[in-house]
Amino acid sequence: MVDVTVLPGFAAVILLFLVPPGPDMAYMLAVGLAGGRGAAVKAILGIGTGMAVYVVAVVVGIGRFAQAYPLLLDAVKVLGAIYLLWLAYTTVRSARRSPHSSSDVTAARPYARGVLVSLTNPKVILFFIAVLPQFMGSAEQAELQLAMLGAVNVGMEVLLYGAIGVGAGAFHTRYSESHRAGAVLHYIAAAVYLALAVAILAEAMIASR
Image 1 (cartoon, rainbow, N blue to C red):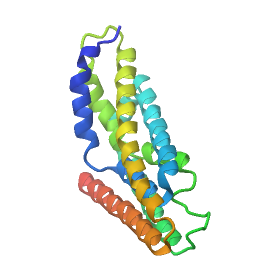
Image 2 (image 1 turned 45 degrees about the vertical axis):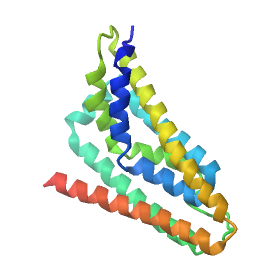
Image 3 (image 1 turned 135 degrees about the horizontal axis):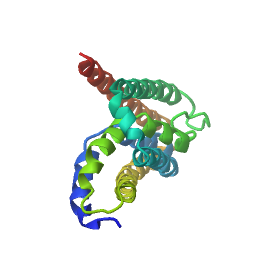
Image 4 (image 1 turned 180 degrees about the vertical axis):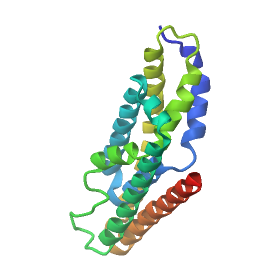
């Protein structure tokens, strides 16, 4: 059986982990601004799917492999930063187009992009590897306990970051009729991507020294 008495403390740790801005939060903010509430909902479902993949990976023991080969996580981190830079570029390009253009890259395929952003966020699997084992409690079956903790983590992130994305989408809905205001929202979204990508690359460079 699982031990649910650890959940209050585990939830508090999750909140401390989720509050600082990261790739998932940045993507939700940006896609909400650029694509609206509908895109934000699809994006957070994609992020939840990506996190679920990591949960399964940890439960079956793949997390130990990543822990044994830290360079693999560094490579994933760099790939994630490059992807964010690409999103920044394409979002700026979209800001210069007609507001009625259907080729908005940020808003297009938000579910698939959410999955990719989540899978290229190494902090997720690092969190699972470092934190989940600390909340095994008196569980008799480790796999079930890890699965429960992972599901709680995914659920909390979907709710919190989903609310951020939907909230940002309210600005998109309000200003979508104005080409100038829409372009400003796109530039803000691009700036979020760019700032986070630079921060990730700087962190990777410092860690490699």
